[in-house]
Length: 178
Image (tube, rainbow, N blue to C red):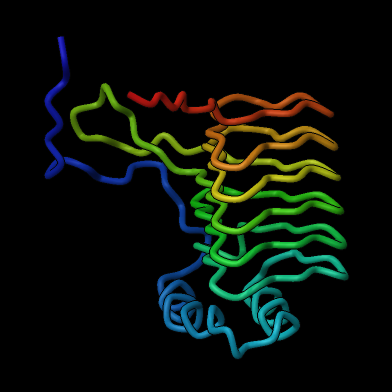
């Protein structure tokens, strides 16, 4: 039998933002400014480090990249994060070395308990290992590890671990003409 959600009973039980409210509020004010096309990647990286992100050398962080909580982010060396990527890291996101996160990618560590009337959180970290490529507009959901040197194709939806060296592609739509 389906569970009726009672959203008024949601408490957020067990979720920890990781920093005090004033730090979270300051990030919410700074983050939109950093997304501007006129802000250089090097300044974005420095600001993220100032807020607690661990970021290696040679990282290219394009404009319009959204990062929920920088203190829950680790990016290795020589990574590219493409325009419009969204790292929704309610829980930690760890990105290895030589990783390409392409345009419009969503890495989402958050979810909800579908069978819980209060719709409480069901969050889990995401790990992207060395040499992986997550192509344009792909989505990787909570609890997933994207293995070393793997490829997640454009628009793919990833809900379980990707083996090292594997390729995951979105299903192709069949086009029929009358």
